Length: 209
Image 1: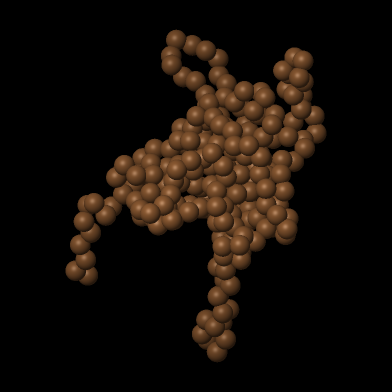
Image 2 (image 1 turned 180 degrees about the vertical axis):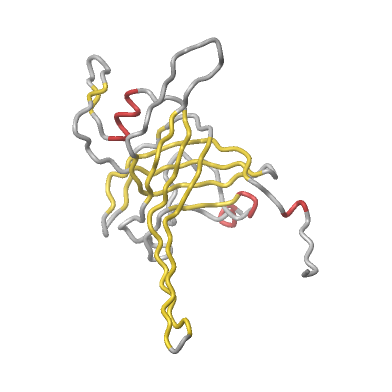
């Protein structure tokens, strides 16, 4: 066994999530990345992320000479209360009748969004996230007959996140997300969710001193 000791203060786990917000991506081209106003999406009970990845090794002379890696889209699952019809229609591109508020199940118009949230860690700090581009799938809805118990049903939203077309100035690359840990003590988190943060719009605490 290696003689390695891990101090308890170095071990953190996820314990909470909040600040679920979205902004519509109005342009993502090689020339510009722009977004609209940031809006609250919903209170959130759970956030989970999966990434489609694959790795393949190519062998020559009985040795792995080449490793090919592929990274696909991120799948973010959000557990939220039942959304209002106006919010549901907006994020999945369905029409809402302005006079009656009716949700009209018409052919969808594809809308792309940036998604922001933060995850609380067991040391009391937060991980801040802006996912820069993705689309929402039409969510399933399940409701059971009411009885004398306390059962009720929430809703799960699936956000499929992709890389931007636009390449940011800071690193000359496109990006799927900006993820920052408060415990690192490096980034300025003031007004973090007032606008969508990109690689070009995050700031070091050093610039404030």
